[in-house]
Amino acid sequence: MSTEVTKMYWRQNIWYLSVLLLIWFIVSFGFGILWADWLNQFRIGGFKLGFWFAQQGSIYCFIAIIVVYVILMNRLDQKFKAKKTMP
Image (cartoon, rainbow, N blue to C red; front, side, top):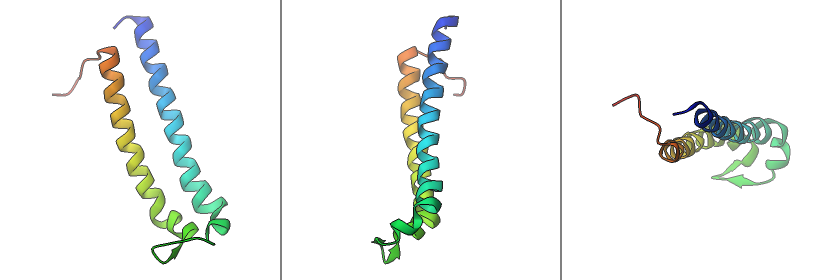
């Protein structure tokens, strides 16, 4: 890839990372800590929602973020015709 194409590739990659990390921060810190008291008025599976996000919800969201990142990066690699370094 040329230098300009490489810069565009990495710009898009950093954008994906920034958005996904912001979502992870909001879910883990926001839902699990900052807004836990407000969320505790709702229940999921018999547990208060704030507690659930602090204990399990952020982990599920993190796994979903990993899956989304893999899908986005595969599409980005196809768009820029990036070569895979691993077999």
